[in-house]
Image (cartoon, rainbow, N blue to C red):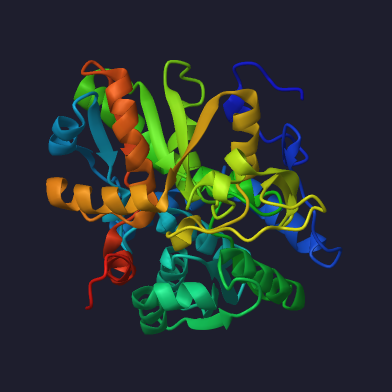
Length: 404
């Protein structure tokens, strides 16, 4: 595989490829829409008026910049490196998702779209899309797997309160992969008036790069905040990974800082060796899904294997193509954490820091514990606290045998 030394941040290439990953593998009927989207985004991202709109709404509607927080009691409990949280769970709607939704809905308005669609797993992307669509008076349809609807009831109700139509998807395992399939079918059917807001750094080009760019506000802020608070960059930046948007948003501004380790934490479910997991980099191989080439969970015949995670937001059998590229190049490290470890960290962070994390970043926190011991007291760790746990309390209570 060819790569550009010391220029990781310059990808993708003109074809939308990150080395051998990414690209555009879509139906012929969708290609004009995808090309029109690419042209519109290329124009918008250098337009001062568009960038000002994004910055103004990010400040006044989302609440950016999000704070950098020293997790003093977890640092003490883990007995090693100093741990800092980038607190994107304090954003409006409770997660990093709204950064990308704001950017894409502003782009949809610029392109004259009159209808917004989205897919969602944990519901945070659906809530964020419905929120921004409501702000701009656009009708919104959200596809959500029936399994995820059951385990994320609070977010389903929030989407409906915001005026969105939530369509249950019963095919497959009724999770994120299946919801994305249905959203793509909708887009093919309604190409003239509909804008599809993809929630992660996957899908056909330009989505992986576009979502990354909108989410990179996380890493840009965190980089400046670390320099201000500690006087130097962290030794490691850590984030959970499903499709990988919160991780890529954190990682991208650090790609050229070779001293900063980039560590993504996949969902190991019941264990990577059990086959009941969502760790596509640690337990998958390259293939094509949802318009791009990347690492996927698949059988010997290339059929997609169902993913499993306690976390609806990580329950996806693939990963963004830029992560696949960073994995193969060695620039980023990818490890995993089990359902049990995530549950443990969910409770520990709540009790020690007064911060109830979403189950997604609870996975990352499990590996932060190991990393803190490895780096020792002189080390600095930056972790993206990408979502809050309000949405997960009913599911966690059930797992812990509590009746609410």
